[in-house]
Image 1: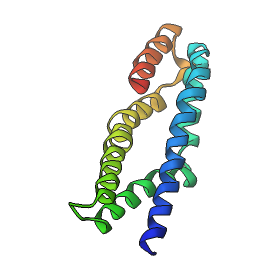
Image 2: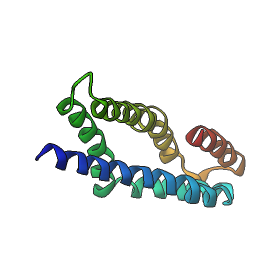
Image 3: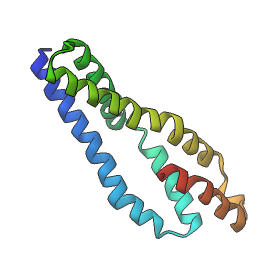
Length: 137
């Protein structure tokens, strides 16, 4: 793959992930906030299962790999292009990949193990409080 093609792919993948997070933040989260506790947890369990699909994986990990590869290919400490790609790479590694891996995935795993059908309303309310605010922070 030529370097210009790599940058195009990187830009498209970055845009897809930005759009995913933007739409989720400003539409899905707003709708979820209006659900009662059981509906909220049930919906989050479903979303967490469904998001783990090939399109998401290709976009999520593809952006990570293409940014790293672009940073390596364009390495030139004096180049503004390298600097911008490198800043994008670091921002994605920390702001998207890192936060997802360190914060969101453990919360998703915790909610996955929670049996809503057998839980009291109090424990459902507590689980939502434990999950929702830290997940959104």
